[in-house]
Length: 117
Image 1 (cartoon, one colour):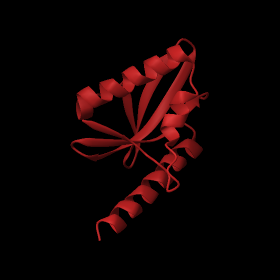
Image 2: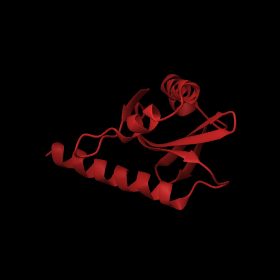
Image 3: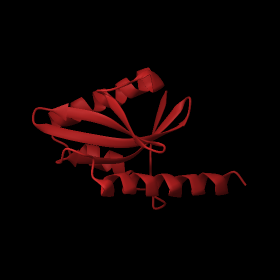
Image 4: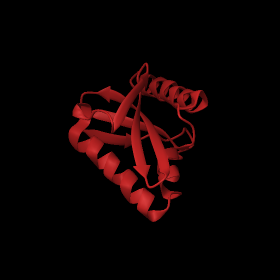
């Protein structure tokens, strides 16, 4: 499975920036989670990943008392795009975080369709 990082139209890799803000041990755990997603792809299930809604899935990362989520979409059977990362502080994934991922996915789909013309 290929893992791509969403980048804004300005070229910012927001998930990469999120990852670089993590403490070293948390970052190592997050990178292991991304590697697991890369290796197992669509075979990966709970507790590592969870479907949220529509095309949006979450990669679940827990280190000590910290819980992180990276929201992503499956583009095709070979590619996922990491859209948004955040520290989870509530029981449920906040609606605002899901909306950010949905907005980025819609924007990325629009860019891709314009590129294909």
